[in-house]
Length: 389
Image (cartoon, rainbow, N blue to C red):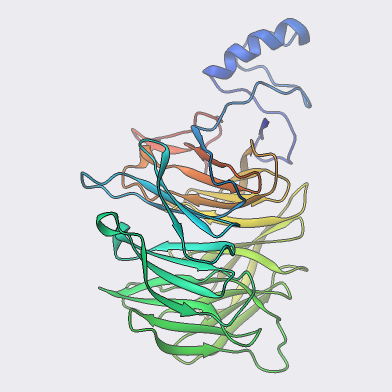
């Protein structure tokens, strides 16, 4: 495995001044060979690899590709932070992040891949979506692990559903619909249909590939952002079931997207080598704000951390990339995995110093990282020296 540090602004692969701490010892050993010297401000010459730092820890034992991850980090004792992972063999692992071991294994998708997970009603209820065309509601309270309800999706694709809390005890869930280009929105827990979003016949965006429900303020009218097979992102108004804006973001299918409702801007990745940031203006028009060209093609997942400081991407090239969210400046490349990284997820710890990043891979492993955590007013990353914007 390798860890690559990037200067700002930069292109991937350029050198960067090393951080103080553990990498200084590495510089000492390197200097005897390269003549770089022991000065902290010395620059690492391009192509010279330093001994890479490891993730904070690694979770093993899924025995299958990890396709989705979801944290739940309760603050009240005896609650402890947990991580849900869904795998290609249809199993869901519930990881205890204190013991770093599996507490429970859930099997409810008939051996078909699980590719979306979301906690609902706290840690004791879980929604899971699988390739068996079922979205299951799990009861995990008091040691139980039973499916209490389910929704048939009528869709065999890989489009992940999206969940939005709209009132106390009430959620909206967007999921792929019966027809290939449809998105269906249900109210939970009643499972009442709210609307079916279907583009006009001449629009032809193809299948929805990724979904994101959001609302400007709690209690306000919700919207849906959907990435499609033709590379476009569409903004839907749920109250009228109409398209408000459509933006051509990519030449290839949109594999993933995330949205920052505070700054009204989002990010999307595709099977090409471009990461695109787009924004929503006051007239509810989507506009491309910035693009970043990657060395290697293929972004499987994107995630904006809850504090809106950093962005993480999961790459087909086995790498996790970290960007500053304000200006999309590259901060670091985490090159731990030996196969495609399918998913990334940030923890929802209330204490910033405890925030974690998890990445799941085709190599059956889940890497856990502690990066750019807010500590005593300073942004801290044990892996890199550059501050996010």
